[in-house]
Image 1: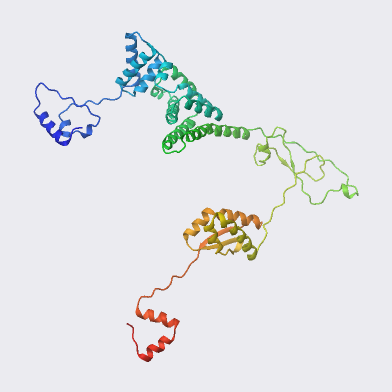
Image 2: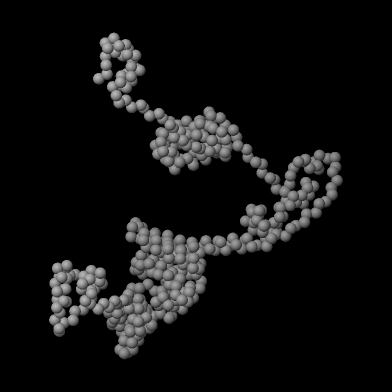
Length: 443
């Protein structure tokens, strides 16, 4: 907190220090100290104390003071201290006084108002099972216990980070938890896919960023939890599709053709030119495979002659042809659609009402707009609806809408006196005769 003048005065003292004095400067902003002062100092950089070292020191104090302390409880205190031994000792002293010398995991999380690890393991299991009901009920239970929703989503992101750390033996040392909880992390980490954990961390981070600006924070957190549960649902869906693709191919059923005597009765004769298609598939074939005849895992399509009596018949749908229409019919249908926009989109209604659709080749409908703004407004807000309406009403799926900008000639600007006279003379030719009679000149 020293000013520039105070630093200069202090520098004078350092240049001629008294023999009995040793100056010790403690600061978190070393870059603000003058280089001339730093050059006269021995610099020692202090870092935060590791969680494991704090736990060992607290365990040593507990043994000397004859205090019963669980390792997981000491680990929670060390995490709460965030690398500061002074804070860890203060919290430890409070817990000892509160619990009567019994520092247990339950007493610590109750005294420090910390959410139990068990909740994070339970909610993660619900994510893996895609159990959205349990997820929402657990979150509601957490809120009823008085815990903050933002702190929960932040801690949930840290939980996923710890699970990701456990995936590799080289990074498992980065997990700052007790031995009992470490085993739980290793067990649950084996069930989690790394891709799921990365996506889960990203969702929790985005929720934390949007939390402060959200008008409904609880809904934001619940939506994020549903997204987390949906990650595993998508994975299960992909697995089911893979199993369907690997299903054994349907056995080919041989259809035996039987000879048949054609009688003179018309009702026993088959119609000429009628095509029949037989779809043969085993009884266990799924509906998806039946609807996908191109899939190699489905049954084979076998075409047989018309004289097979026992085969199921599937009629081939006739192709739907596009109906032709004219300019008058197009204008009528177009006007009907524009009238529907009068109440909902009055601005587009007034624009389209003044436009006339032009029918070109291949059923291309051209609309001329005045400027780029109208084109962009039309394409974003009404083009898709108009295209669907025209195709349905005119029974033609080949219809397409093309928007162009109408080219308008800009008016000629008049600058000189002669140009002004020529413009007036074009409107009133008598001005030319008057100019000649009176021998007038331009001003």
